[in-house]
Image (cartoon, rainbow, N blue to C red; front, top):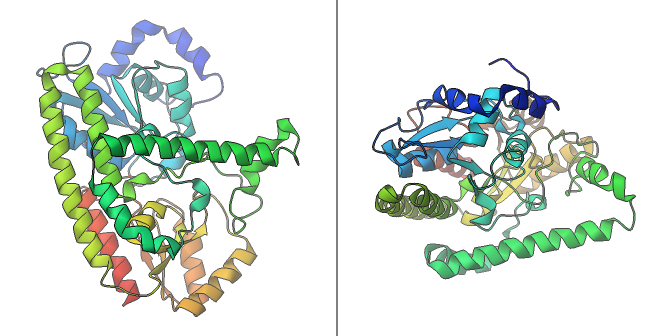
Amino acid sequence: MPFDMTPSRRSVLALLGLGSGAAVLASCGSNGEGGGGSSDGGGSGGGALDIVTSNYPMTYLVTAIGGDRVTLTDLATPGADPHGLELSVQQTMAAQEADLVLQIPGYQLALDDAIASGKADNVLDVSGVIEMLPSDGAEHDHDHGDDHDEHDHDEHDHDHDEHDHDHDEHDHDREHDEHDHEHDEHDHEDDAHDDEHDDHGHDDHEHDDHEGHDHGPNDPHMWHDPLRMAQVGEALAAKLGELDPEGAETYQQAAADLRTELEELDAELTELYQKSSGERTFITSHAAYAYLAERYDLHQVGIAGVDPETEPSPQRLLELEELIKAEGVDTIFFETTASPKVAQTFADNAGVASEELDNLETQLDQAKDYPAVMRENANKLVDSWS
């Protein structure tokens, strides 16, 4: 349906009536990335569970764990930037009436709005499952390196205590951000603070007139850490088991198999990245790789911040040119879904090569799944340091 999502969306939905929900969902089958519907599933209507995702990594998890017991709708358009997701009336109703929606709060405001005006019990909030990194930590520092081995052991130990720890850490980060927010209010009017905070961002290197999306306190790009993906997979299996008790054991086994695969991938990537010594610095068009940098002790530098729509200031570009000279960086990485022009132009001006790095937000090549892209990205990064 060609409707545009405007502030009057809810009134349009009200006119459509609740009775149209079934018809809308009937037209929202699998988009080819997820498993097809099956009468063996355990959805609310006795068929397959209707699951809604909005980026490729979550689609990958649903496909691996749900299999043919789910019908998948991925709201993201392949090759487009999912940050700026806009929903049609049909897509909004699909999200509101689905058996389960996978949400990373702050990542896509249109989906957040649809969820807020829909059912409260059909959402798996990823930020409540894992420890999220703060959005102001886009440039990952090497100083944590001494703790990296201990971090590795903690991530591989995936018992219930680890999940409790993740919730505690998540709450701590949220309390820390709220404290900073209250401190800033001494210098700003209450009504104007949020807008000014969004415009200026968290990072002094970012453009002062940032008019992009506000991702909130958390960096949403958690899928660049395979072990965090495994944690979300386990939470997804538990949720699917609640909705479809007959398939609970199947979901749990699929999540366990997926964790094994992702732990093997993590070990492979760890070995690959450790082949390179030194700073292991990489510059990319927007800072979408903080989780990758934390996991494998890399040094990410974003031309822009977490938001791909942020435009770098002239001062920022000068700083990056100095960094390129100081650390011998010879490649600038761009992303197809995040306006590559800025990164490619900067690379040309700086006299270095440019190379594409897949941010995995959508599946650019159907022949390459999540592990394949993670390996491909790793090889490109390691080659840039050799």
